[in-house]
Amino acid sequence: MLGRRSNQATFFSEAVKERLPKNHFLKVNNLIDWSPIEKKLECLYDPSNGRPSYPPLMMFKALLLQQWFNLSDRGLVEAIADRLSFQSFLGLSIVDPVPDDTTFTRFRQKLQEKGLLEELFSILDSEFDRLGLLVKRGSFIDATIVQAQRRPSSKEKADTEEEQDPCAIQIQSSTKEEDPSSHDESAKTKEKDNATKLTKNGKAYYATDLDARWTVKRGKPYYGYKMHINSDESGIVRGMEVTPANVHDSRKLKNLISKEEEAIYADKAYDSEGVRSWCEENNIECCILHKGKRNKPLTETELEENKIWSKRRFRVEQIFGIAKRCYNLDRFPYVGLLPNKIKAFMTVMAMNIKRAFNIIQTHKNAISSCGSA
Image 1: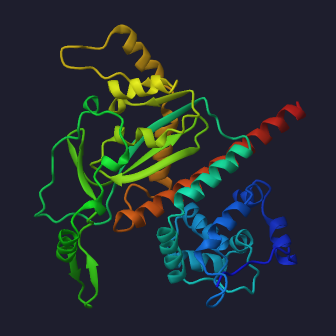
Image 2 (image 1 turned 45 degrees about the vertical axis):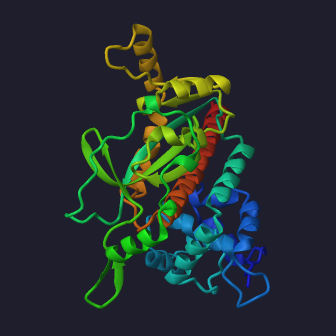
Image 3 (image 1 turned 135 degrees about the horizontal axis):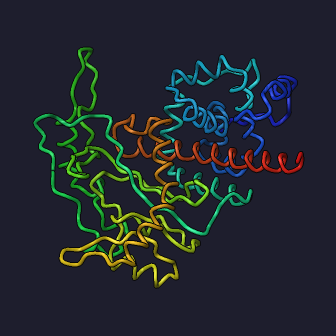
C-alpha cells in the first residue's frame, strides 16, 4: 500500500530548520518543488493492497542523502536515526520509524523495475529550467570509463582491439549497438552459471560482471562501463547514459543532444563527417575538436579552433572529476548494468541539485555584495 507523509509542519521540523546554519546545504529542501517527483513515484506501490509503505518521496530523498554523504545502506540508516538535519530533510519526526537497509535495496529494485530513472532525471531538469539555472547556449559532451566492481578472471583474455574509428561511424540509434539483453538466452544462462561462485558459507556470488566489457584507452586496457553525459555551461548535467565500456563515445551523441542547444562541444573521439553533417542539418554549431588523418594534417585554422574550443570544455571534465573524487564513481559498487545505472543516475541527480544550490547561493551573495557597496 502506498504510504503518504503528513504535510503538516511540526514544532520539531521548524525547530531543526531554525538551528541549521544560514547557508547549510540541506536547505535545498526548500528550493526544489518535490511534488512532481512525489506524484511520479506513486506508481511504485499499489494504493490499496498490503501494508502502508514508507513514503516514496522520503525514500528517494534518502537515496540523495546517501550520495551526498557517501553512505552505505546500513550507514544511511544509522545516520537518519542519529542526525536531526537528515530527519528534517526527509520530513520525519523524532518518533517516526526509520527504514532498514533492506528497504532501501528493495526501493532501488522498484525504481529499476518501473524504469523511472530517466523520467525523474527529466523532472529535475524541468525544475532547474523553472528556476532559470540552465544555460542553453551550448552542450558539452563527453564520456568516462568507470571500472566494474568485479575484476575479470586472470584466465580471461582482455580484448585489446581499439574502439572503432568514429570517422567510419555515422550517427545511428542505440538499437544497433551491443545490448547484453540481445544475446541468446541459453548462452546467457550458461555464462551466468559459469560466473557464479560459492563463498565459504555456501552463499552464491558473481565472480565476474557479465555486463561489463573491455576497452582500451591510450594503450591501457580497462574493464567496466562508460558514463556518457551532456552538460550545459553552468555545470548541470542534462543528459546521461550508461553503457558497457566497449561502446564508442560517438554512438551516444545523438541520444544526448536535446536540439535546444546552439552549439555542441566535444573531443576528437566524436569527430566524423557524419556527425558534422548531422549538426549542420539540425542547425547546431559543431564545435567538436578536429582530428588529424593520415597524410592529412590539420590546417592552421583547425588548430586554432581546437585551441579555442578546448578552453571551454573544462566544465564537463570538472563534472567527471567531482563524480570520481567526491562520489566514489571511479569504480561502480554493484554487479550488472542496471544496478550500476541506478547508482550513476542517483549520483548525477544529487550532483545537479547541489550545483543548483551553489549557483543560487553565489547569485545571492553577489547581490548582497552589490547592495552593501
